[in-house]
Amino acid sequence: MEIAINPSMPTYSGGLGVLAGDTLRSAADLGVPLVAFTLLHRKGYFKQHIDAAGSQTEEVQGWNPADFCTEESARATVVVEDRTVTIRAWRYDLVGRAGHIVPIYLLDTDLDGNSGTISTAATPTIACNRRLCSAWAASAWPMRWA
Image: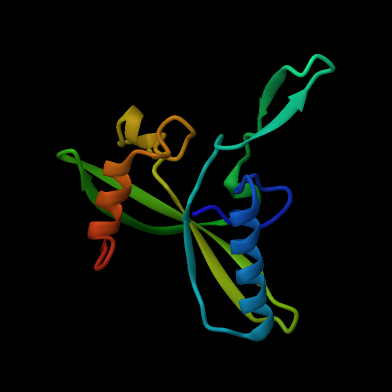
């Protein structure tokens, strides 16, 4: 799921991401006990430019999660295509008007030890890898935290 968290974080591309972000902001404002999870996309979105002739060019919006989030020390593992994949989480605290926090965990596979395809699982070319998403969903609860 994409979530519009912060305008400086390219974590969404359109209306559903904005809706998800607004829902979480409302939960934070109302003090609703809620936790959100999403995939971390380091280069998942781009700025679109249209020239006078109508041709489109793209500018990738890379970003560093450490500039906005806190890296969690715990790691989870899942098995994808007979390979063990390590997942880390980055935490972003969405603070409501009265100070209530809704933590958002951005799941990241860009770690040493993960293969090249898996370590970039949240990049645009691999983001729709159904096997990775299915494996994550099937084994997410209970997670094996290392």
